[in-house]
Length: 337
Image (cartoon, rainbow, N blue to C red; front, side, top):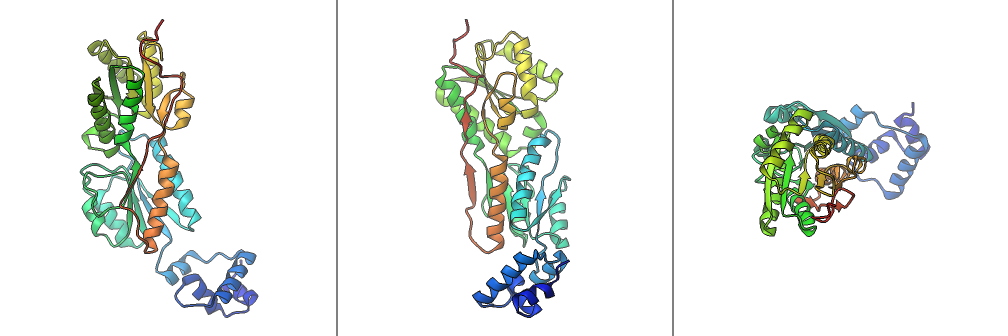
């Protein structure tokens, strides 16, 4: 194992000089710093995590607060988590994943333990009880998601309001006049989860603007629940020709249920989904979709957090615009033959 004394000997400096280069606690000449850094690279020296934390007063660990509540689609959540971990490692940080629904108590426990340097918080609700505490904590934080009142917070997410509007706009351009949003399970709306509420708000506002008949229905991602939802929707809205699906695990079941009900896609029914590209591309009928940019959101959340840790200013709000990709599941209204 390479030791700090080995680095010092190769660079022709004292071990304390190497420590100062690593911690940044004293000013070192540029030439000496370059020599030490070259020695570190050549020998493959890795500072002991505990010693590095003592030297810098940092743990080099970020907390990712990702409560796995009911109605949450875990595979998509883990895409965000994977992006955060990868980005954090590029900054020589590890990630402590917190999946329990502990709310404010969990945030206080992690902050008081000095285990982490900063927080990334997911599954943000419009009236999120954690936000007042996040404003007062000594640790910097970034939210993936937007509460209703985001003042004093740093937030990033896909612009879900614009996403709902974009989906309706696409269907309107194709001539559809009766559309539905099949959304997350009911408990997601009951909690006031931001991404679900904002998508529904954008969908409804755009439908009103285009003069289109619209409805929003939550949907449990089980075959019986999907079948019941589709039967109810077609019974109550016989003129339905377009749907937007914001429920990743229910998407394949919904496509199947509509087809079993005699609705051909896209001849009788155009379908747009909010989901990862892989899911849309590999559906029985490739689905027109707005991608969930988990990798970009996770990476940029870490970049925002590292900037805050290093004392740099960052924007309060970062909204990523929706990107709609047209595939085989949407067509002009009235193309049935």
